[in-house]
Image 1: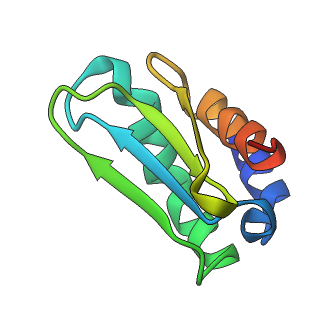
Image 2: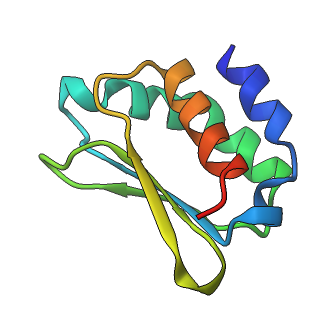
Length: 100
């Protein structure tokens, strides 16, 4: 399911967004879905969007969040704590399709 969501994004990340950041903890159980998402889908995202900045920020004890930066510096974020990789992919798809 997550793979389908990531593939459906294709090269459309750059149409609405300027940057995507994934904040996660390297060891907490609450960040497991975010870590799994990165491990399974980061390469696919970068291959589809080679010039688009997808940043992974790891920090011990940080809350797992997806951040989207739009035009004019506007940002939006969503918590992905305790989510599965599929749910993280759906959260990313929601951020990509939304307007700030």
